[in-house]
Image (cartoon, rainbow, N blue to C red; front, side, top):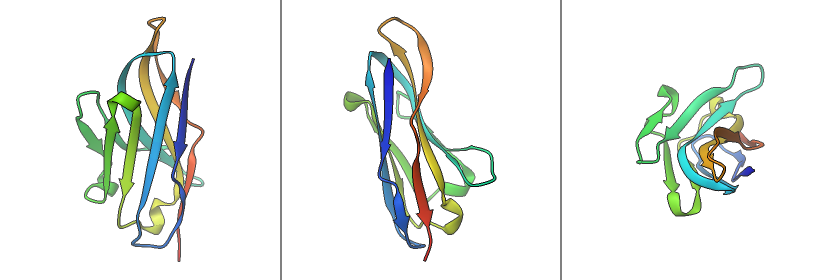
Length: 120
C-alpha cells in the first residue's frame, strides 16, 4: 500500500507565500509523476502543477510565474512553492503520486488534501 500525506497549508494574506509538501511512502518500487490539484468550493478539481520523474513540469495558466513545483526523488516528496498568492487561490490542495508498487501494480495515489486560504 502507498500513503500520501500533504502538509503546509494555512491562512495567508494576499501577496503572501506558502510552501506545500507532500510525501509518499509505503511499498513503492518506482515513482512516476507527482503533482498538485486544487478544488475550490462549488468548483471542479483542477490541475495546478505536475512534475515528471525526469523533472519536466507543467502549470495551470493561472499559476504560471507565481508557483513552482519541485521534487526530491530520494524522499519521494513533491513541493509546491506558492508566491504572490491571490484570494482566488483559496482551495483545498490535493497531492497525487503515480507510482509502481513492489507488486508491480501502477496507480495514482492521493492525499487527503490541505486547505489554503488567502484572505486579508
